[in-house]
Length: 370
Image 1 (tube, rainbow, N blue to C red):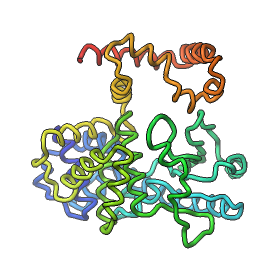
Image 2 (spheres, rainbow, N blue to C red; image 1 turned 120 degrees about the vertical axis):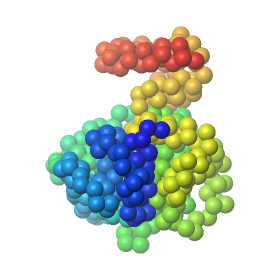
Image 3 (cartoon, rainbow, N blue to C red; image 1 turned 180 degrees about the vertical axis):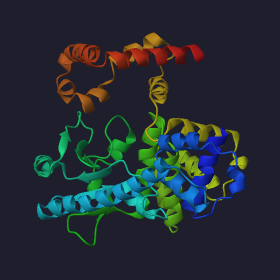
């Protein structure tokens, strides 16, 4: 592991445990490199707070990142309350997701940076919500097929509105298809719902696995795992492990949780096994939103494509589950599938030519390295 990555993990450990960093452990720190890797993992505010607690003078861009995170957390919370008030008045059930809840478990406001807020809501009110958001100054990015609708407004407002938790080709989609059965009503609103503590942990772990097994995910995911387990000390692990077994991610959750604890509970990185070191390396090189190379590598493995020609064929002619989710018309009218294949290919060549070229380069490199 590069020294800067080690320093970032140590400072994150200090931040979430409210420990003053030992300056002797970061004596050779490169502040510019540390800033860049912290940005890559979207934990710049946290690292800034740790540096300041150790009496280390930071440049203006560190300060700006910290105050931007604090301000954004406050503004997103305030605006979300207005959106929820609209939903309550119109009988729309809704629920906060992921970071909007996790951020309040970190020791200080702004320590857990937010890019957006994710909200799950009743899909039958999609049009009404769209009208409300646009009337209140939001620009609208229509969801592509089944992905969440995105609403944005200056200066920092960004809401991803979900009508389902998962979409394509995994057990998670079926597991959460009857989502209301897993929710409990909030005491303060007749239309706001929450997960139980156990089900919230199951969901954030399943969500992390989705990213981990596709593009990859970064250090903030490990921090979320550690902070949540630290906060929720009386979880029903028999229930949790039983649900993870159903989802096929029991081993992933255990390895992730142990890795998070070894890093952020007592900072015992020197005691990591070889497998844990490889897992940590994957997190470190993935960043918050993963990488294109990770995406292609994981897709190749999932396809079981051991040659470039097999990979290309499976990309052009995906299985029917792909069409069920992304192109339901062709799924329902299978006799027209050849038109679907042609449509996808022409559309990709017109609108995604550069991405396809890059994808083929990555595939070529992966095949040569195997």
